[in-house]
Length: 500
Image 1 (spheres, rainbow, N blue to C red):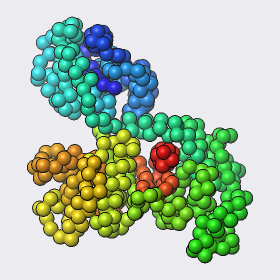
Image 2: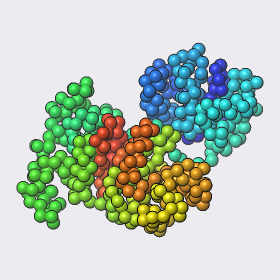
Image 3: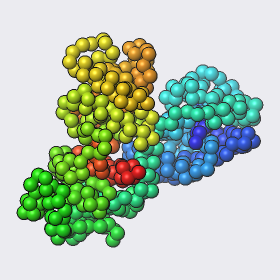
Image 4: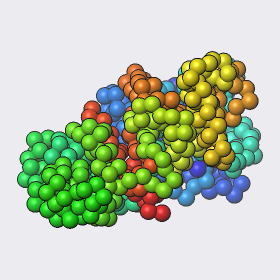
């Protein structure tokens, strides 16, 4: 869908005539067009004002995106009516109008038409000021129009149609990504086991996933314990949320574990002992296809979560290493960081494998992979064994997957900032435009993702493990409830991909 945002240039701007005019003129060109009003039609004014006043703009954006997709399901073009900036029309939203319009324009990746209250305000200087206030790229601005002017004569309708029908690279804003993640998980309808079944955050996340039909969760705990933990949070456990008492079921998996690990000398006694670990029991259940994926780590360490998977599930065909990615929900774009959770000091060959896995993960979730192999040096500007490792890994990955855009070594700024990329690596197809960042070691990757997450208040979805035959995902022990919900959704989607 192509979004065209009609934004006020100041108080008193009436956008409705311009919205209606654009809808009519674009429909006359043969396009399927629908209008959309984010505030009022999408989210009620009172709710929007409350969310903004309490600092929950991310939730507001997500709610609007959900309404946007519902309203525009069959449309080629959506004409979005912006938020006015005066109290008479916007009421409690007036102080947030500029912030809200700017966020919506960026999150919808919209082109913009500015509406002026008076003809004398339709000047380039006004548009320039509006661009500065809303932080909109000039290339996204179609023009300015007086609210009383005829759309057909004031704006280039043919140009707008050309923009609407042009093939452009798709990328997701964070609210879009979260919305589509949940929708894909719902469609997957997978059964996901949660070995930390009575952990409070996990219980709340499982209740949310059940109520929103994100996944069919299985909590490994006594139902009465789950209900007690839920009650302490003022929650009710849905009847359809499955609870499995591991003490009553672990003996069912002894024979299977003995068979799976017989080459390692597994005995029934040892198997029963290992099955005391709910992660191990959940992993065996997954190996037997009783469940589709596993999420753990709110209490267990990464090693506790990954070790049973490596022993029982093993690596996927063609994978030489298990690695991880985080989906970093930056203000205007979703980026992929790998490996920030698993491998302390990968070799060049392993780093190449991580790059390929990370690129494939990005593509699977709708992100066009442009892979930057990160180093403290760009190209040959620096030297040393760590730079040489990254350079070798880049060559290996390029040879193995010539279909992927992979470049390195690149410094982070050269990979992420267009002006720096053009200066430091002018011939690179990745520099300045990277969507996948592959770090040279765990120290660099873990520190970077946490610095970005905490300092820039960015949501980091993951880590999502790569390279296993079936999806097992590890949580940070500091994970929030939303983190667990999104990880469950990721796991459900992975289960579909791995069974395809």
